[in-house]
Image 1 (cartoon, one colour):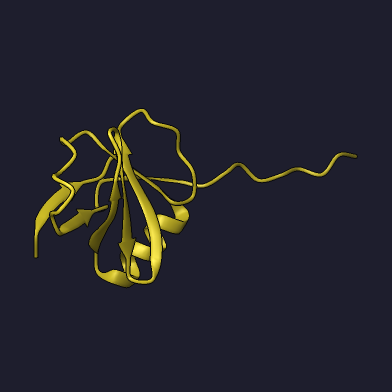
Image 2 (tube, one colour):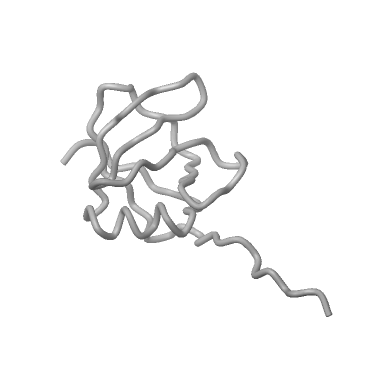
Length: 90
């Protein structure tokens, strides 16, 4: 299964991709402070807690894994994130 990484926050698109893939991901590209992954057919982003949230973002307080590792992401305890609804001006 690969290393299990607990998530602290997860964007709504990333959450849907993880549900569809059963939490399984593959490393697409590793940067110095984040990792781009594929979850099924979707591209998602893993970064450290406190980084900017967006729909494809997943944040963790765990150390980021080695780039060649297969990962299983656990969003069970993660706070979901979605942008605030846009309120039309009167």
